[in-house]
Length: 230
Image (tube, rainbow, N blue to C red):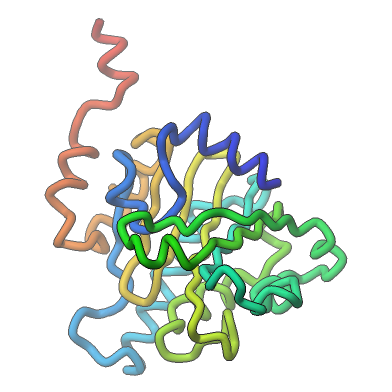
């Protein structure tokens, strides 16, 4: 499955390194605002908005029959004992059929954030990949855990010195979904037409800071229209 992910990115997202911030690393993407800016995280209305937006976007991007990948990157020191016991809590806790965990693939990668030279020398990335269908995971709970990660570290438990990122990859529709925390969610696609419906339907959720760039991409003519005119 690690090979499937690698081939998928090479074919559909040429030149992309799968790491944050996806929105700034790829030409076709939308950055959505998830929580209410300037409001305490734990406010009831804010929690309600976080739950609504994360689950709405996920349900729109991933269909019941789509072929999906559940990717977790864990950043640790090179000799950290963190991953001596696997699978990770995120898979044990949120995958419904525990037999499926035998299909979990692990791949050791260099530290992905090359701009941090000190960390690049001392750290590595453990990438876990699981193929699944939407009904096979408790995705509502995964999204909640990700959006809570600065407050209740349920993904890595007591290993707070390590960081992580979780990606959901839609192989069928060529879309990558990255909820980075309660503040925002990056959704990128191999072509802007694949996620234009998100731009149209949830335009008011777009992060204003990046709105101008997003408008520029999605207000341009679709590639198909340009070709037909030619």
